[in-house]
Length: 182
Image (cartoon, rainbow, N blue to C red; front, side, top):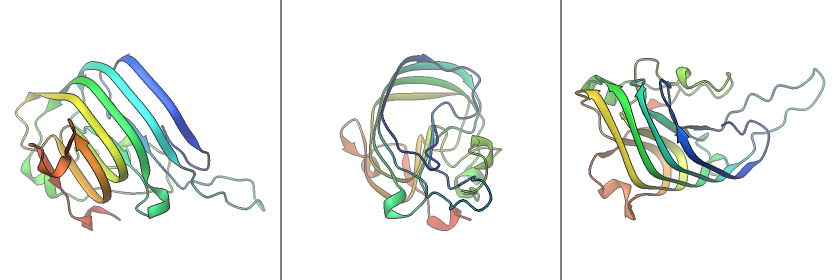
């Protein structure tokens, strides 16, 4: 889901099976602004009020799920609820992936591959530039041992929770320094 120029809001996604996906859950704001020559560029629109619930799946790629805005207060993904998710994934992530650079090419086509083709800093969810994102009853199970945490966040993030608790205090969550941006 990408809000490049449009307002995307009030979305409910439920009862979904996701198998063999690079990023099973992918929410992204981009700045492609593709317009006809001589037409003014349109700024990225908001991506907000999204509910994703009752999701299952297996054999997903090691990259993990992505929630990523643009790093500016007015370009954050906001008001997202992700609940009752049970995903299986490849696993095999290393400790080096936790600190590896993550691309943020806001001008390219919104493809999950652009972020980190070998895997993100978390095996479950990589959350960057978002506020009021609430995870409830989320399980991501790697098929192979994985050294990465379930969640990783990159500022600016605000009010990210897991089962009603701040994500920073939840087990399996780490903040990732802002140096991951391009």
